[in-house]
Length: 155
Image 1 (tube, rainbow, N blue to C red):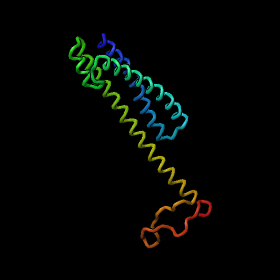
Image 2: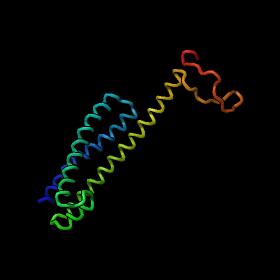
Image 3: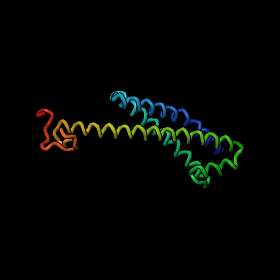
Image 4: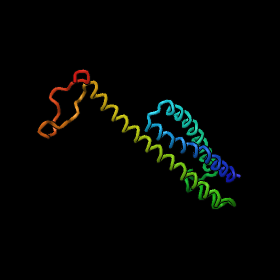
Protein backbone atom coordinates (compact mmCIF):
# COMPACT_ATOMS: atom_id res chain seq x y z
CA UNK A 1 0.00 0.00 0.00
CA UNK A 2 2.75 2.44 0.96
CA UNK A 3 4.73 1.55 -2.12
CA UNK A 4 1.82 2.34 -4.46
CA UNK A 5 1.18 5.65 -2.69
CA UNK A 6 4.84 6.53 -2.98
CA UNK A 7 4.91 5.60 -6.67
CA UNK A 8 1.80 7.71 -7.27
CA UNK A 9 3.41 10.74 -5.56
CA UNK A 10 6.55 10.28 -7.67
CA UNK A 11 4.51 10.03 -10.86
CA UNK A 12 2.41 13.06 -9.86
CA UNK A 13 5.59 15.15 -9.63
CA UNK A 14 6.72 14.59 -13.22
CA UNK A 15 4.33 17.13 -14.74
CA UNK A 16 5.12 19.98 -12.29
CA UNK A 17 8.86 19.25 -12.44
CA UNK A 18 8.79 19.33 -16.25
CA UNK A 19 6.80 22.59 -16.15
CA UNK A 20 9.35 24.03 -13.73
CA UNK A 21 12.21 23.08 -16.04
CA UNK A 22 10.46 24.72 -18.99
CA UNK A 23 9.82 27.85 -16.90
CA UNK A 24 13.48 28.01 -15.91
CA UNK A 25 14.48 27.77 -19.55
CA UNK A 26 12.03 30.55 -20.43
CA UNK A 27 13.38 32.55 -17.50
CA UNK A 28 16.88 32.33 -18.96
CA UNK A 29 15.63 33.90 -22.18
CA UNK A 30 13.67 36.56 -20.29
CA UNK A 31 16.75 37.40 -18.20
CA UNK A 32 18.82 37.77 -21.32
CA UNK A 33 16.20 40.09 -22.85
CA UNK A 34 15.52 41.80 -19.49
CA UNK A 35 11.79 41.25 -19.97
CA UNK A 36 10.57 42.29 -16.51
CA UNK A 37 6.82 41.63 -16.98
CA UNK A 38 7.57 38.10 -18.18
CA UNK A 39 10.02 37.56 -15.31
CA UNK A 40 7.36 38.57 -12.78
CA UNK A 41 4.89 36.12 -14.32
CA UNK A 42 7.49 33.34 -14.32
CA UNK A 43 8.36 34.01 -10.68
CA UNK A 44 4.74 33.59 -9.57
CA UNK A 45 4.34 30.37 -11.54
CA UNK A 46 7.70 29.04 -10.31
CA UNK A 47 6.77 29.62 -6.69
CA UNK A 48 3.51 27.69 -7.04
CA UNK A 49 5.28 24.73 -8.66
CA UNK A 50 8.05 24.71 -6.07
CA UNK A 51 5.52 24.70 -3.22
CA UNK A 52 3.68 21.76 -4.81
CA UNK A 53 6.92 19.82 -5.33
CA UNK A 54 8.01 20.51 -1.74
CA UNK A 55 4.66 19.28 -0.39
CA UNK A 56 4.91 16.05 -2.37
CA UNK A 57 8.52 15.64 -1.26
CA UNK A 58 7.46 15.95 2.38
CA UNK A 59 4.70 13.37 1.84
CA UNK A 60 7.20 10.95 0.30
CA UNK A 61 9.55 11.48 3.23
CA UNK A 62 6.69 10.94 5.69
CA UNK A 63 5.79 7.63 4.04
CA UNK A 64 9.36 6.40 4.31
CA UNK A 65 9.70 7.68 7.88
CA UNK A 66 6.45 5.96 8.90
CA UNK A 67 8.06 2.68 7.78
CA UNK A 68 11.19 3.49 9.83
CA UNK A 69 13.23 3.89 6.66
CA UNK A 70 15.70 6.64 5.78
CA UNK A 71 14.03 9.50 3.91
CA UNK A 72 16.49 9.43 1.04
CA UNK A 73 17.34 7.12 -1.86
CA UNK A 74 18.55 4.44 0.58
CA UNK A 75 15.08 4.27 2.12
CA UNK A 76 13.50 4.05 -1.32
CA UNK A 77 15.88 1.20 -2.20
CA UNK A 78 14.94 -0.66 1.00
CA UNK A 79 11.22 -0.25 0.30
CA UNK A 80 11.71 -1.28 -3.33
CA UNK A 81 13.53 -4.45 -2.29
CA UNK A 82 10.41 -5.55 -0.38
CA UNK A 83 7.86 -4.46 -2.98
CA UNK A 84 6.37 -6.12 -6.04
CA UNK A 85 6.66 -2.76 -7.84
CA UNK A 86 10.18 -2.12 -6.57
CA UNK A 87 11.80 -1.86 -9.99
CA UNK A 88 9.20 0.67 -11.10
CA UNK A 89 9.69 2.65 -7.86
CA UNK A 90 13.43 2.90 -8.45
CA UNK A 91 13.14 3.71 -12.15
CA UNK A 92 10.58 6.47 -11.59
CA UNK A 93 12.38 7.76 -8.49
CA UNK A 94 15.66 8.05 -10.39
CA UNK A 95 13.95 9.72 -13.35
CA UNK A 96 12.33 12.30 -11.04
CA UNK A 97 15.64 12.90 -9.27
CA UNK A 98 17.30 13.50 -12.64
CA UNK A 99 14.56 15.93 -13.70
CA UNK A 100 14.84 17.86 -10.45
CA UNK A 101 18.64 17.96 -10.84
CA UNK A 102 18.14 19.53 -14.28
CA UNK A 103 15.88 22.14 -12.65
CA UNK A 104 18.52 22.90 -10.03
CA UNK A 105 21.22 23.29 -12.68
CA UNK A 106 19.03 25.62 -14.77
CA UNK A 107 18.19 27.63 -11.66
CA UNK A 108 21.88 27.96 -10.75
CA UNK A 109 22.66 29.12 -14.29
CA UNK A 110 19.90 31.74 -14.07
CA UNK A 111 21.26 32.85 -10.70
CA UNK A 112 24.69 33.40 -12.22
CA UNK A 113 23.12 35.41 -15.03
CA UNK A 114 21.35 37.60 -12.47
CA UNK A 115 24.61 38.19 -10.58
CA UNK A 116 26.43 39.17 -13.77
CA UNK A 117 23.65 41.59 -14.71
CA UNK A 118 23.66 43.08 -11.20
CA UNK A 119 27.41 43.66 -11.36
CA UNK A 120 27.12 45.30 -14.79
CA UNK A 121 24.27 47.53 -13.61
CA UNK A 122 26.20 48.48 -10.48
CA UNK A 123 29.24 49.39 -12.56
CA UNK A 124 27.12 51.49 -14.91
CA UNK A 125 25.57 53.32 -11.97
CA UNK A 126 29.00 54.06 -10.52
CA UNK A 127 30.07 55.58 -13.82
CA UNK A 128 26.90 57.66 -14.11
CA UNK A 129 26.93 58.89 -10.53
CA UNK A 130 30.65 59.59 -10.35
CA UNK A 131 31.45 56.78 -7.95
CA UNK A 132 34.72 54.91 -8.16
CA UNK A 133 36.13 55.73 -11.59
CA UNK A 134 36.90 52.87 -13.95
CA UNK A 135 40.54 52.11 -14.67
CA UNK A 136 41.54 53.20 -18.17
CA UNK A 137 44.60 53.41 -20.37
CA UNK A 138 46.19 56.84 -20.62
CA UNK A 139 47.77 58.46 -23.70
CA UNK A 140 51.07 56.63 -23.17
CA UNK A 141 49.27 53.26 -23.07
CA UNK A 142 49.74 52.63 -19.36
CA UNK A 143 46.97 51.50 -17.06
CA UNK A 144 45.84 54.41 -14.88
CA UNK A 145 42.87 55.70 -12.97
CA UNK A 146 41.57 59.21 -13.64
CA UNK A 147 42.81 61.71 -11.09
CA UNK A 148 39.44 63.31 -10.44
CA UNK A 149 36.27 61.34 -10.96
CA UNK A 150 33.62 63.14 -12.99
CA UNK A 151 29.96 62.37 -13.15
CA UNK A 152 28.33 61.70 -16.49
CA UNK A 153 26.84 65.21 -16.47
CA UNK A 154 30.34 66.71 -16.11
CA UNK A 155 32.07 64.59 -18.73
